Length: 188
Image 1 (cartoon, rainbow, N blue to C red):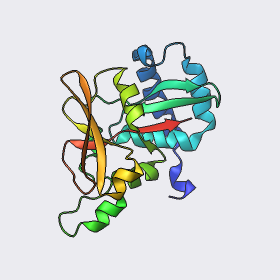
Image 2: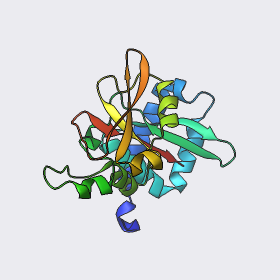
Image 3: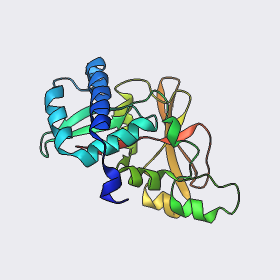
């Protein structure tokens, strides 16, 4: 996607910053010791990343700060919606799976949509980190970054939370379900 399309109007920037600030202040347990003013300063100088956060928001992800990498001085955002983002469900895992299917294809795949949004799909480790911050995906599930050895054999992995436990499962990468989406991460 070209950079012209990855720009927000001043009104859109103000709106997404307001949404992110309100969520940050409401969920301080996700980012103890961090200050919104510093996060906002980073966002204001990284407008393309702010565009990506807006894309996360409009697809139902409810992005929030979940950490700060001191070495790189980057704030880490994850999708923190209670269930897998509504605007990112019913997708195959990747393009290869999408192209292999002849009939009843979904409109997109998780990896391509994440790339188009400028975000990364969560890894299993990141998914487990997210679950320490709350209870997510009690009714849905989320594709996670699949190791290449599993993907080469046609599979992909996804996670959810049931019975107060995080489960990791496998499926064919060309499977898709109304309750399975994907969560993303972004470093700013």
